[in-house]
Every structure is written in structure tokens, then in C-alpha cells.
Image (cartoon, rainbow, N blue to C red; front, top):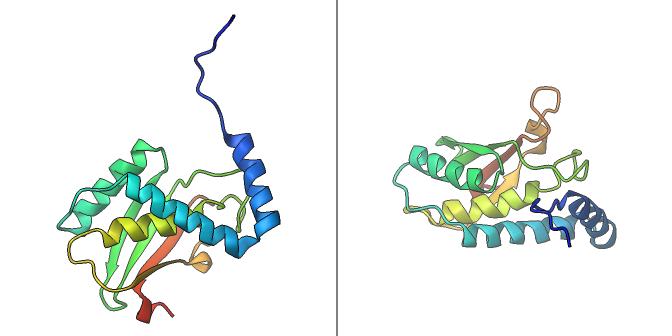
Amino acid sequence: MTTFNAKPDFSLFLQALSWEIDDQAGIEVRNDLLREVGRGMAGRLQPPLCNTIHQLQIELNALLGMINWGYVKLELLAEEQAMRIVHEDLPQVGSAGEPSGTWLAPVLEGLYGRWITSQPGAFGDYVVTRDVDAEDLNSVPTQTIILYMRTRSNSN
């Protein structure tokens, strides 16, 4: 019997799964599901406690590198009482997602929400939301996802 040591490629499976979830459950349910998946991933892969945003950014990039999920830039927006999260090189599930190629973006909402709220000084009821309008596909790659983290009372 011949055995191969190649790693399995799940891209075809994930594409078919993404289409089925979107078709059967709808976009809103899919996004809720993927946010929960992101929170679950964050619970299994946790950053150490960090005292600065710069230190947290370094640690999050190390974790993202371990799973080949791109990299992040964190920016505090004091005037808006928010954090801007720019994620580059999100893995794609074919053309799935809106805009095309961004099907996994809701995972990032759950992932960053849990990672950041686990840090010292994080308090309140936070929400992470995606800013699709800022993801101008003419100026940034499709795999660039822009998120904002705000307290729930400031999320509108």
C-alpha cells in the first residue's frame, strides 16, 4: 500500500461548506455562527497579558502567524473611544463572502473581541464591527478587513 505524507487540503470542502451554510442558513445566521467560531478559536489560542497596544499587536501577530491567518495592526482612536483593527491577508474561501473572498471576516470579529477583552484594563460591554465601506476594494486588497471595537453604547 502506498502512503502519502502530504497534508490534506480542505479548500474544496470549505468552499462547498460556505455555499451550503449561506444557502441554507442565510447570511445573518452564518455571520453569527462564524463570530462564535472566532470566539472559540480565541479561547484555544490566547495571547499573554500585555500592558500596551504595541505589545498586544506583536503577540496577536505571533498567534496569527502560527495559524497562517495574516497579520494585524491595532490603533487606539481616543477621540472616538474605539480601537481600529486592520487585518491583512485573511485566508479566502474561494470567492465566498461579501465582498467576494471575505467569507471568514466574521470569524475575526469574534477572535479579536475575545482576545482584546481578555487584556488588563479591558472593561465594559464591547462590540467588534466590520467597516465594509472602509474596505475600498480599489485601494486595498480583498483580504484586508477593517474592524472597529467600541463599547456597546458607542457602537452606533
